[in-house]
Image (cartoon, rainbow, N blue to C red; front, side):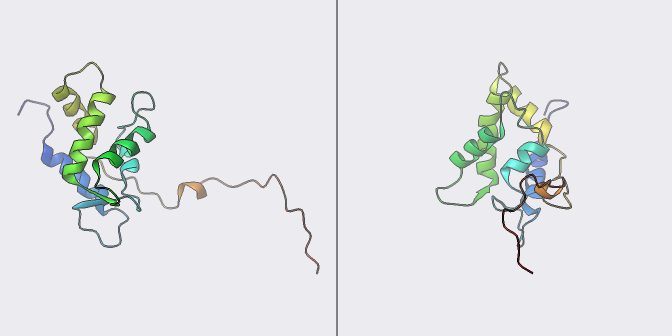
Length: 137
């Protein structure tokens, strides 16, 4: 292994951390799309999607392609397939191996960000249009 390269084991450890985050029955072997440990949050938290070459939509599409039809989870093997596809998209102009190694570098050592409340609750809501009815008291 070359100096500065990231091992697949380090990436798998990160996958397991995201897979168990927010899951009620975590095993770390599958990443469930209904909880906070989904692929989109991994893409955001690890900076896989840069908003230019790779967007959140790209991440969702690639992960949908690699998962088993009608399944709501992906395995690490499927996750690895998705990373291979995203690497060439994220790091255009690099060889397949270089791009994958750079993507591994973004992922290794990362953990899910801990949100104390859902993102839609972090900012106060301003009511611009009050209700048109008045309660009778």
